[in-house]
Image 1: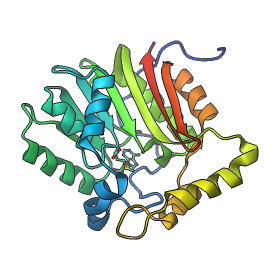
Image 2 (image 1 turned 90 degrees about the vertical axis):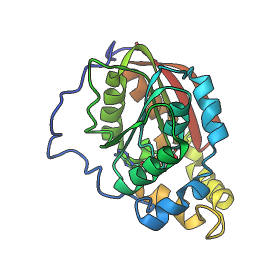
Image 3 (image 1 turned 90 degrees about the horizontal axis):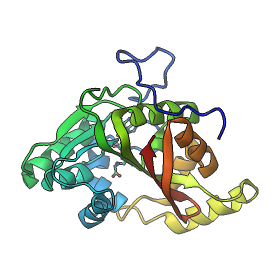
Length: 247
Ligand SMILES: C[S@@+](CC[C@H](N)C(=O)[O-])C[C@H]1O[C@@H](n2cnc3c(N)ncnc32)[C@H](O)[C@@H]1O
């Protein structure tokens, strides 16, 4: 591929420019209020067994340094800490982090996770302690594409060379010609009755106000962040996961 950077440059520490996206301002579906946080695990289908399976796939064991960006209620971070990993959760929402801290206190892992009130665009990971694994699930779509690229560069720069980035999100793999029909089909299938999960209205807000984009755009961004895609899956036309290796 031409025009790509061979490795991820370290982002400059310090305050982000004033023209950067306001990542602490809520976007789209309400996830930050106390009620939304209390309902989040049910709505999201948070499943510790699925988290454990993902950690197995990513080779997370005792001593692995893992950073979960936009960690939400912290399930993945706590599961990693329970197996002895040095686990860090990063999120812009103090309410989410409060829930995550309580989850960790209840689980009592051998080492307390690090919790960081920060975002994709301003979290500073210490350069002398590079991560083995960086994960981000169901969150990169909170940023417009220009800033997704910045976020991916920053996540790549947190990793040691050869380290692993895992990305899961609403990412579209349908043909743009089919977009209206594909989104309509997703909205018809995904919504749950209020009180049982995210509703159809929530998914409409997601498409209208959040920034999910096409797989071919995300894949170009991953490459340009200095990441090699080693595994990809599009289990639905609306969702994708990528396992990447820092070059
Ligand atoms: C849908 S939740 C996903 C949480 C978790 N990753 C999971 O899979 O359950 C999205 C999370 O992203 C967080 N978030 C939104 N924008 C963010 C940003 N710019 N930087 C870091 N976290 C962000 C929200 O506070 C929320 O906790």
